[in-house]
Length: 399
Ligand SMILES: Cc1cc2nc3c(=O)[nH]c(=O)nc-3n(C[C@H](O)[C@H](O)[C@H](O)COP(=O)(O)OP(=O)(O)OC[C@H]3O[C@@H](n4cnc5c(N)ncnc54)[C@H](O)[C@@H]3O)c2cc1C
Image (tube, rainbow, N blue to C red; front, top):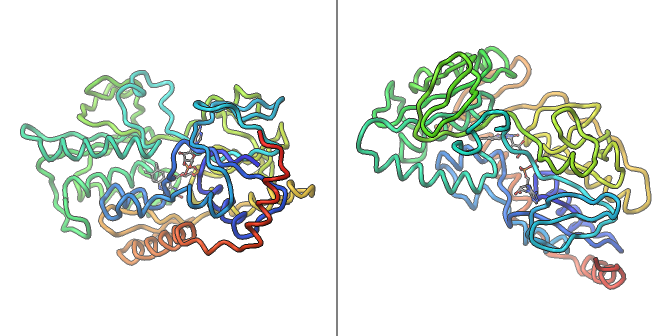
């Protein structure tokens, strides 16, 4: 069993195989990074409410717990004939069954200059490196305001700009008094939608419109970014928004290797899977999280859905490895979103529901920390589990 990417669903798979090892199965995780960020804590990390270690899961200890091999490498493609996972820095890894949970990156294709000049929120480690430079530039700024522009008006973009503002304007973490104007940093958000958070209800949209007004964040709505130059974003209406730092948080894009490998994809190029999270074209390939598109149950690209797919993915991998049929899984239709506002407050959104308050941030913080604890505080390994795996390693043909 080869797992590619240490995303939200695969950490659950690793934990499951650690808790209940399967004889005769060799597990390998291929991940480009030894740590994986937890999406729920990303805004709090950027705002300065959490240190980096609190918002990341260490994959090596988790692999050790699951008695899985860890290969630090980037998957570049799958050879579906030979059943090989091609990697950037090592020989291909052979598999009987492969599962993909590599996430997505914001779509910059089709916007000339965006790749070159904009800082994408993903991969998160690259964003965080550059983010440190932006915070230093803000501190050293002597002439005129520092202009931060975020492209993308969904939950990710809105949470991001509020977190960025929190960190740059209010250096101390925690709740802060709101100022109508911020003297040394200017904030702009560009979205092609006519409203903020277009997939949420009107009351949630109104709350964020009010928060943007209170914090002097300029929202350029109904404006599609069409080209990016070194110092300005140009929109289809002819409006240009100058920037010093440009952050890209638009809808998710799929990596090109999926289609190049010959796997079935949806119209946007994501790996098309059935209700059992199995590829619609290659049954020995499974996928979950942002990288997957469930044919019968399309859902937004969100960490919540990736997390929910973890247990059914683990179950179906076990069933397939044991020679049994996998079980179909129906994801919930709606998820409760707790959207943070940067200042240790949050807004709850589900269907027509909209609630706002500091207590919602405390609920979100509690949920997020509890989720993280599952992957940090690993139980002692059971000796029978260890021996089961040791036997399996001896009997498995190594690639
Ligand atoms: C600012 C922001 C805030 C967000 N806040 C929330 C939120 O509050 N709640 C929520 O539900 N969602 C949120 N999201 C969305 C959420 O981040 C994603 O939906 C979620 O991370 C998807 O999880 P995943 O398991 O598919 O992949 P990821 O969490 O992205 O994990 C993929 C893993 O695979 C690794 N990887 C990637 N490519 C390769 C490769 N080729 N080879 C090997 N390894 C690879 C990566 O390093 C990473 O460890 C937010 C997004 C943004 C941008």
